Amino acid sequence: MTAPRRITSKYPGTCRICRTPFRAGAAIRWQAGTPGATCADASACATAKAAAEARAAAPPPPPALVDAAPIVAFLTAARERGLKFPKARFVAPDGRAELRLSVAGSQSRTPGAVQVVIGDHWQGRIGTDGTTAGPGMTAALCQHLEAIAAAPAIAAKQYAAVTSRCSFCALPLTDAGSVEVGYGPICADRSGLPHTAKGTPTAQTTAELHEDDGGADWTDDDRDAADEATAARRETAVTAGRIARHWDDDLPF
Ligand SMILES: [Zn+2]
Ligand SMILES: [Zn+2]
Image 1 (cartoon, rainbow, N blue to C red):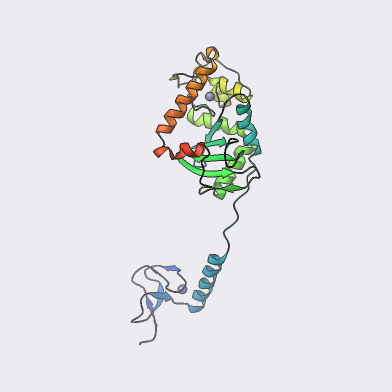
Image 2 (image 1 turned 135 degrees about the vertical axis):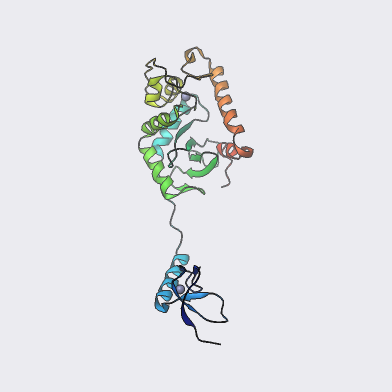
């Protein structure tokens, strides 16, 4: 067998020993009869290999802690005012997708935990002790949730500014006063949040059953029906009801 030779690689590749990638044109060591190439610099290769092994052996970083207490207070205020499963919608970290938060009910395996969904995807939950669990609870998302928890009312307002929809029920906001605060008058009443109608229609006046249009005459049954319709519209959009089950607290752990 011939000795390894130092050559210029014709193709990009990866070092057989330390898995460091190299470019076409890079200096590498190659040995006839042995598949693959290695770094030209053996000591740099050994260092890179040790670092890779240390990374592989290190325990994964502990999940971030998020103090969701203000979000829970924000949402449970609505529950105490008669909404069975209050949710609030915010803007996801990407600035476009919808981030939905809800508080798990007393029948849940994790009562009081905040469920986190982005678009159609369940991300995870924040326990009452601030621990986070779930496939999507990255450091970036946890940071975003911290910011929402620090000022849920401001986050609701940002959601309304982006979507012209109510942060709580997702119905279009038809009044400038509602867009300004981020939610309609009925949801404001339910959540115990301030609201002042300005009587100025916004560009979006497509309200079907919207709170701003005759909401004052609604009975509780009307409101429940509207909630159910909103929920049904959303749930049909969700693949195979997977997220719907998450909302019902039927979580995998
Ligand atoms: Zn190497
Ligand atoms: Zn609303």
